[in-house]
Length: 311
Image 1: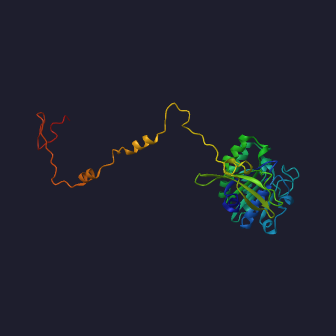
Image 2: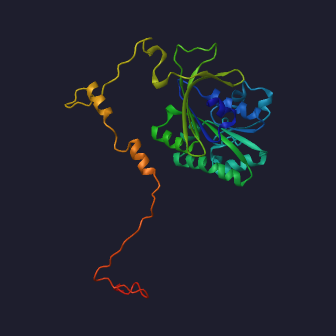
Image 3: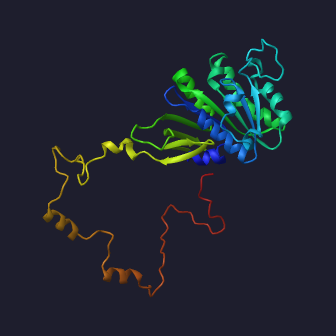
């Protein structure tokens, strides 16, 4: 499922939630590489890392399609350097004014990271920018297919995380994989993906993934169902005990064999015998007639049948 979203199935706001024990920037770069290889323009708003570090590992095919908006060197605008992204520009009109001149076809906007902004700006204001940016961009002729943001989950309160999840179309939470799971030199991760589709249906899936060189996402399978790890599987051949809901009752819900045979021998009321079926299906030989005898109080008038009504 996550591979399909990276390959182009994700639209709208995409939240990649990592933690100090499981980094998510590699997955963020997988979205960047996949978007660039599809021929989309990629705008990177970087607050966490410098341009050289972010572009490390990409080929020229990918870097040629990246428009890097550097907010790492001078985020507050104190140095007065031209071209850099500042904290004051993080608003729907400000971002559209920066992105619209380079708009050609569909675009993917990447924010690294949303946590840097949440720690310095009012939370409601950041949420308003995330919600208003697609509509503002559309009015300016900019087609933002997806807005991929990296979020360091262990830096924020649970209520803030839930509010951001309500705004997103896709939420991917990364967790460390079990130590028993290995894949060469790559570091496997557990990705819990939550995808709200256009019709309102929500799909949730948990899977093992890793990011290969070139930021290619690799699917490694799915964890065992029902939260049972492979080490905790029941022993082979042993059937787990099932609780009996009829045990310890003060009355009997079961039938003996003799009672069951007696019950099955009783004919059901809606089952007709062959003789009764044939009699009901026979065509009547004569037509039915209706006989009516008027009461003494009836006032029958052929010219005015309703004359006796009190109206």
